[in-house]
Image 1 (cartoon, rainbow over the protein chains, first blue to last red):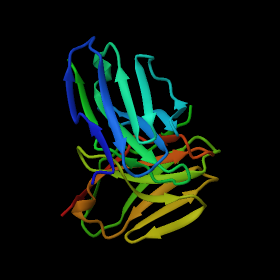
Image 2 (image 1 turned 135 degrees about the horizontal axis):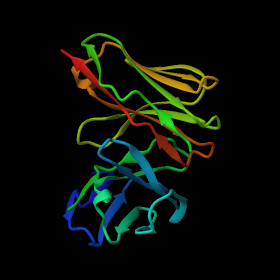
Image 3 (image 1 turned 180 degrees about the vertical axis):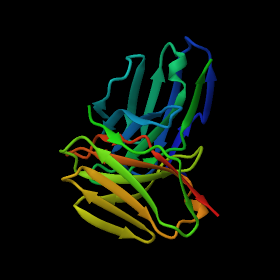
Length: 112
Length: 111
């Protein structure tokens, strides 16, 4: 059973489109994250949710909107995609009282 | 701006040697420190965490923390070709909520 899963694994789209990435974890964790890893492998936190509440919102364009319908899911919607949005997006989760983050397999987004 | 710095590498070591990876961080309030390993095309996986000054050993891995110098290191003894990967240093704040990652050091273990 996959602990943290993301869909889709690959996403190729045109500039200006709107797309969504979904994340689900079956670990019973209450904190979930979205990270962006660019071509230089720099992994940067974008958002963090704890018990469906947004607790970290780094400097990210407001074209990016996270949504957590429940503790096990954290989705990311991106409007008006730009070339610079091309990256790998990782979802991660952890127990609030724990330090270990478990990462999903990543979604490779390519904007043409 | 909280920063975590690492030498990008690549760091090449022969099989069986000790690989030494270094990391410095800017936020003195940082409380928890982590080393992640990321194979090409895969997601990061936690290999070590350390919270207090000194050394922490786990198998072939030893993490070292010096808060006064704002320095964390990872030693890999008896390096194997399967250790070839990018190693990411990460630091979390006092609340353990926000994680800042370094750019990673690419390690290549030559057979």
